[in-house]
Length: 85
Image 1: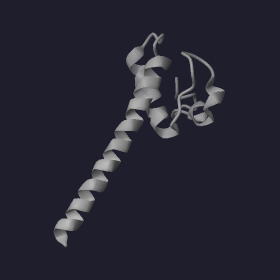
Image 2: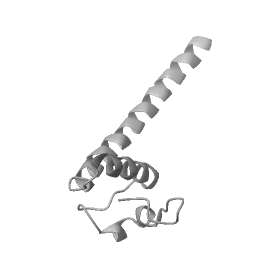
Image 3: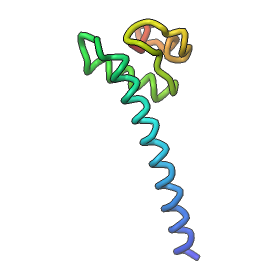
Image 4: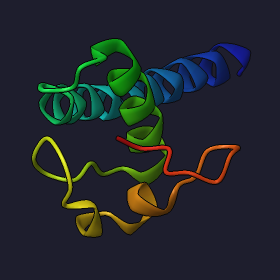
């Protein structure tokens, strides 16, 4: 009984890991495109990644188009300014 439960737990956790990694690949790809022309690449990629993971979308292009993703557009930093590049 304990062995069956342990196997079930292992299968479920590995499935969850695959889903988590799939989201990261999506965000990494979209943010690399979004930040391709940014003057400060590492900062752009960091904040784009945070916003993408939370909103599950990144606007197309390297600038603007934020209406495509209202969550991304409306996220603010501690100073009340736009957080997402």
